[in-house]
Length: 84
Length: 228
Image 1 (tube, rainbow over the protein chains, first blue to last red):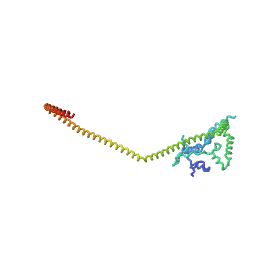
Image 2 (cartoon, chains in turn red, blue):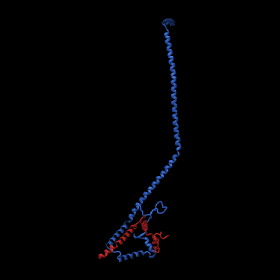
Image 3 (cartoon, chains in turn yellow, orange):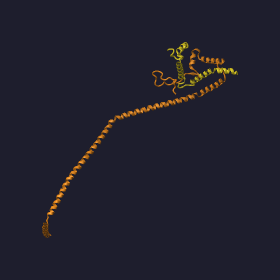
Image 4 (cartoon, one colour):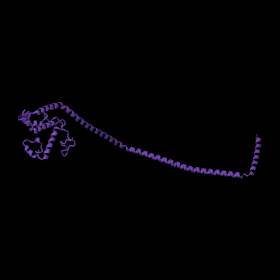
């Protein structure tokens, strides 16, 4: 089908830059994209009859990584200065 | 709680009952990495590809000090061990409990639905029975008509009797009146005649009649003596 209508997982690597040119980078477009991504994640891993620990654990792992990334300066500065 | 993240009625002709939830969620390996990642790398690197990628990445992060090992690493390791152990041990119990809750909700909803269906069935049967009863209304009206006719007849006969009695009373009165009048006339005439007769008897006539009576009596006594 048309490039912009397909979900991101079905876009080939070679077509990635054309796909990036078609999607709208306005605030509304970005908000819509975030909402759709969150909705698809929920529908796949959380709103099921027999979900396991996978749904929340992936969110927690993502949060851990993000927080490590935000505090990286603090971590690297502490290790260098402690010198133990 | 309304999950606004799940789109409802997105198409023009939306299905009236919302489709049921899928049974199982997306496959996730080791609780963290979705299965799609392994499938994505399988054609190029086979089965061990993602694991080699993971190990290489980890060693790279550690050696380049992109991930520094400090006291928080030990804390994270302990916490992760405890969490994994807890999930492995109590996971099935919690799942069974949640399933039981769900089952109860479904059972109550189903029971409500069945009860409603049952009440509606009985209502239908009652209605049919009422319709059958309504067919007999001709008999009911006939009986009522008969009753009313009987009442009218009884009333009519009662009044007839009253009329007859009243008329008889008046006629009897007239008859009694005439009888009384005749009686009174008779009595009055008799009295009047007697009074006149008594008045007409003068003393002279009275003496003559007494003497005649004595003579008659003597004759009679003579004849009586003769017979005895």
